[in-house]
Length: 332
Ligand code: CP
Image (cartoon, rainbow, N blue to C red; front, side):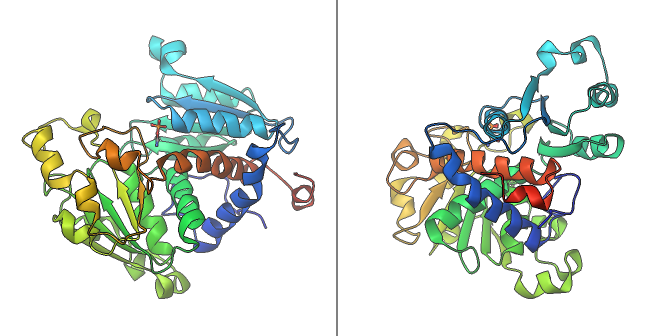
């Protein structure tokens, strides 16, 4: 089944069926990374450009690995080694890259909407690898893939998302995805990093923002500033990084104060279900939003999230880079 979209710009734009298709395709690719020879010819002759204007370890590397495991040619571009340093605009950079006929351009940018601008001028598929505080769709997809691996379902699960919600593209994409798939989401953070109107502004779980079939199965989203309330009975605890690079003012008095009210410790985890899993998109600020004891503990699936990233990004590249249905059978 085709994905029926040229680009992957955000989870908000995806239907439940499209999300399901990406997750099922990722499942079929999972095993390739466990083989002695981790390579299949599926995207031979295709070109993937990674255009990262912000720092990244997990996303950039896993897109590159995903492309290479599918035999595509992967090219990495960063501002420090490109003509962006000489003042070239995003538009001109994109038009010049487009002239070299790539099949997919993966972009991370500090400005919300930058991937959408590229999508309008490029015939290559554009993948949003994080745009400002807006969306990080492949992170939400790999988070869902990891939750499914451990909990076998999304519908009805209680998911607590805790931390710097206001600046988090990960929270935004996860709220969209988890709501569309029927989870019960509780978002939590200090009032300065989680405005109470977030629920309304993001539009998640509001029937007007989705088609009727999605509205019927939509989960719920609640806002709290009390961490113990968010953790109560949670199946999944998703901690977020404090995004100091996006904070122009002091949003909390001190790191110590922040950890006291919103940091995850083993003591705090007692409010969650005994088998609750602990997630974090990385990079972790140890002792700020999460204690090492829980980040490295038996219920942490943080490194599983990183592993999931390769399979999910293989699926995204495969579904976007022009694979005909007849090729699906031959891909492995
Ligand atoms: N989760 C995530 O986006 O990590 P990177 O910033 O290292 O890509």
